[in-house]
Length: 463
Image 1: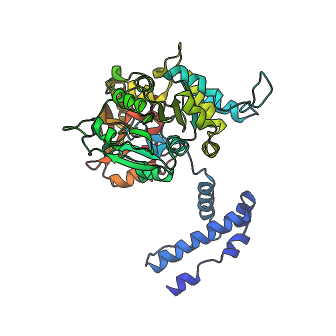
Image 2 (image 1 turned 45 degrees about the vertical axis):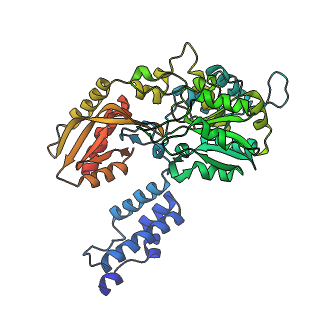
Image 3 (image 1 turned 90 degrees about the vertical axis):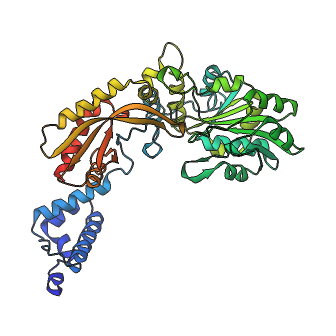
């Protein structure tokens, strides 16, 4: 063992040989030194663990090519394009909603030059960044006014801070939700400086529960959409109209966090009757908050729509600046909202809506395309199976969509190893494992990605 360790070359010797100097000139001395130290450390650990591995040869070009590959891997962008074959359309871990081509064009235009972000081109005076989307939101939802911030949680937070700090917020126990990452509505309310007053029970909250809880310090009646769960069976809840009438009678604000704001009717595509933002506002809700990167199909953003007098208060609230939307997200949001206006067809142009609306026959055909591409490999067991896809992102909980997946199994490596190799590919392909088979769900795959998936599977088998 000691002899093997002594035979390991020194890092300076490797750096000073011809191949080492060429590699340092190609990249940098610091990068080569870093990867050399790491590689030699791994060899030492392998030898100490009892592995019978040959020590690197400083004249071996293949060894230095391995170093080059590792440097290239380190230089590669950490945030990269992946193929989503999970069957979850709005996948938070995978970046949620892909943007429409029009939104991508808008981001490119806003980023490659200066823009009139906060300049009124007619008067030459300072303008408002919110003006670029406010009229569109009003048109699409019927709201009196609107303002946007950097995400949905910020939208809720700024409303509570500006309108209920040091006062009470009344919410049903059945709506004290927890969203992704462990963030809970009671914690958000507490951090805003407001005081939470819970009413009702988990499954039943009545109008009289709200009435009995209202006191001199009450500012807001808060509704929260059950974004990622359902309570079914023995349940009761007051209607929005009933809560709106109560809020008006007591001079309070009725606010609803929709989580994922829907702007169009999705029932023609087999989804449940999800209230649109416009319907919620017409029912008498004073303020509605929702995300831009969920069912709306745009970039990360938080939209606040409702009564003008309340939106005006938010616009002058100092913390709004800390949560403001940046110009690239604003450009993408404006372009996405414009796709909801005639003569555009949002379902045909916005990727999230297009994925929801596609029929199971289209998805199955896509799965067969991948399977046919792989059938010639004798080491693979490939089949097309029926699956259930989901909207995801805290939208339409437990509502499945008919889908199809390519089911893959091989004796060459374990299913977990195959999934791992696909994740390490270029581009990475992300699927899911069920019954010891790798499922690549085609609901979330584009037609142009069929060949890429088949090629990625072959490369994964090659190791």
